[in-house]
Image (cartoon, rainbow, N blue to C red; front, side):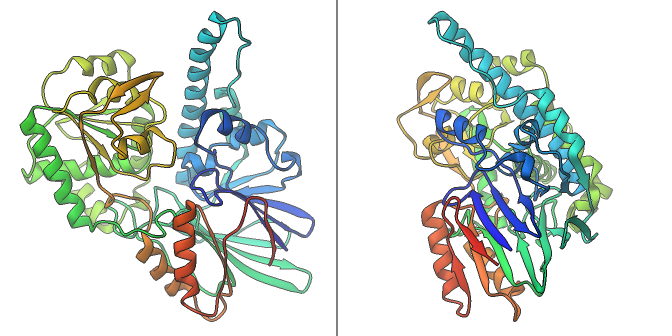
Length: 464
């Protein structure tokens, strides 16, 4: 049995790990690497293996850094099953086609400029047709329903509490006389989020692959996050400004809508118009409505007592480009929630370009901002930031709330490891974190004693 780490090593994007046993290869996730444009395109385009040689794939959840290269994988010859939960399958149907559409739009825009300079046209990483085609490979299983994805492999999903449908995967592996029980967390939820349940505790594992996005940081408490959001909304309203929130279409947008709905019901913030300006976020919200079985108790009760948690009088969902552009002409306090969460693509770019030069406005960052992304540059409060090919002065207020993170923080990760450790756990592989975060978490796990903690390098193999 061999485990090879191919993505999200010393980084938080491009999750992809390969498991080999009984002459078959099983892939865990197939995410897009995100960062500098040219580097990411080449890295995503060229797999470090032959896709035809992968027998099956297990997908932890729908975020693009875990699922986003599936259309390319299938186009390049992968014919096996993609195993995931029902909610993740539904989310991927919307998200992968949206990812392809954005790529097609970006390439069309670039090719106009290239044609003007006599340069050859570029091609997108994959097309909407590719994204649609890859959905034929999806096979879904509910939590705690065992399945057999490959020879000698019994798998089972448990709720990871990260986003709708996210799963911890427990793999019982058998090769000859050797057996191992491996757990892959994907991304682990913080256990304090509105709407979703807490991450489940699994038992009797021999080896663990765990993320480390916030391996050296602590989140604000849910109460502190709520209080901070109320302050930011009220202060922006008093300045007569707009609040621009780059938010992931899956999870973060729905959490913010849910929280703002509750705040307005208790009159702790003014009844300001809220616009969700992201066709993907709108489609994803519809998928949230289809899966109340994933809700926690509080969200379930809110649904019964107050109706749809994602639809209320001050909320508007914006689908058309024309409606989106009209928001630039609004000269009163409003809240605009728009994808993407790291401000790398989508309509939020236009809202930022049109609003960050005005000191009355606020930009609220509610998720992790990877290195080299526009979101990270705004987080660093650079005097000017590049948006759509132009340097734009950053004069708006920049605020950050970590309490709405969908990831467990340092204490959350360590407490979860302690809860699942048992007597059998020996090997822990720390992935999906920038170098400082991953090393810090690895050192803390080492201090527990009795565990072999590994920080894999890209392409590194381990015998289980």
